Image (cartoon, rainbow, N blue to C red; front, side, top):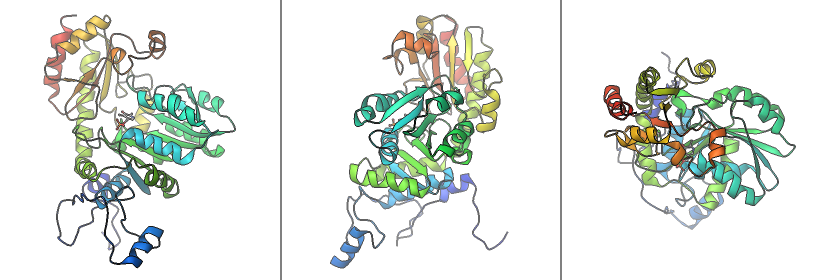
Length: 394
Ligand SMILES: *Cc1c(COP(=O)(O)O)cnc(C)c1O
């Protein structure tokens, strides 16, 4: 031990980092429900507006509770800076619009979150920013899709719902010498299980709605990275307005305190459930990066600390058999949300992936018998009993 500033581990940072106490010395983080801030005099107002003096002005620009969340998440993610947003989607929108302009091009994984695909294909395309979607697992396809105007690689790993792994190091090695930014949506793993910045990524994006809150209460998002990159995101946000609310930041600060124990416990539950499903006679196939049967098990072992808490599996049969499992659940929640302490179950072919054509679904490997489970904190035996009720009817 020395007198130097200690380097704290992530679980310590998750509880302590970023907190600024007010004059009252409150132990918990303070919730500042105020839309604007008061100045001592006209001169100070002028200095704050011009940026000559640091400090809060208006909550679309900054709020002390939001700042505490940003600093805490940056510390856990190992990022120089973090900018919080109103939702995960607004984080993706802000990251792209802060760094790309009309005429620029994105290479993105073909198995991204559905709303991200819509954002790139139907909204950003109208601004003249085009996207080529390529194989999630084939770095050569990313390299082949690069054009002179390519500015961004965008990926999310493991993929939803099939848990395919994109090789972050391989993709950053392709992008970096060409000056292409790499953004990784780290929603599924969180910084507890996967650290994209250490693997060479430039930006990490979060839907804080999922594991960072972890209890299904609020929407939120974040962009983490080097300050020279997040500064541009902040400028976009300050003008365009999808900032995180102070109340949601306060809820998320408390969520971060238990992030490590929740994510590790949920991933341990998922590993046990995946092994049980794989041995089940009514289950045809399990998709879980922590199982040796996963085609990218080795890569997942290197890149992630564990298999994570999302398990997908195919029942023997099709839609009717899959629906029978869903409809016989009394404990698992039938909802597409994930990252909650409550386990959820969803049938991707008729919900999250229901709007794409059957051919495209088949090409993406999403069969009618596929179910996705986002494992929570209940006893694994109770989850097994709940699933067994439907499985034994198949
Ligand atoms: C939910 C989700 C998003 C979008 O986040 P919101 O907070 O719902 O806007 C983005 N990426 C992934 C991987 C998600 O699961």
